[in-house]
Image (cartoon, rainbow, N blue to C red):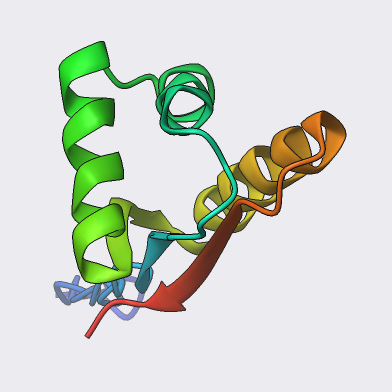
Length: 103
């Protein structure tokens, strides 16, 4: 071997482990003033639910006080909750959607 020969060493590359983003729940809070039909309409419009699914979510909130609408990434959850709440405010109803981290 001459002085110019270089032995190649294999390089190891480590991939950083990516963590999944924390998921958030959008929660429908029941109230005694917003009509059921309006709640179902908001669930269909904002959350792309079918009539039947929207009705089930609305009835769960009606019976238990709250109902989980959807679980998704934080920014999407906050945007959808705000959009749905704003839609109700424009119509003059106190309907409320909140977000909280999933456990």
